Image 1 (cartoon, helix red, strand yellow):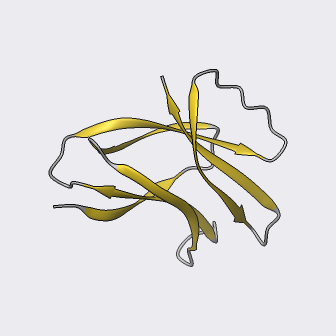
Image 2 (cartoon, rainbow, N blue to C red):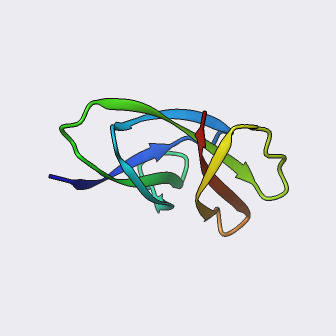
Amino acid sequence: MENVYKYGLNLTDFQEIELPEGAEILCVDTLKNNNCTIKEQLYLWAKVNPDAILVPRRICIFGTGQTMKYEHKLKYIGTVKMFNEKLIWHVFENYI
């Protein structure tokens, strides 16, 4: 059985997150967060089998105009506007 789950992302160039094996990344977007000092949080949604083992997935986030310094294969996930459209992030999965 598959479910759609939400995973928090950090605003950093590169990170690894654990997703169930075979997870299909659907999109990225922000949600308002009134419970902390950062008012918007970046999230990734994926279709997953919650019974599958967890495996690392590599996520890269680049701002508009920023050098894409990873030489490995990148698969585009989505573009997100944050903080009243003052920051635009382009999110990719990094394959080795």
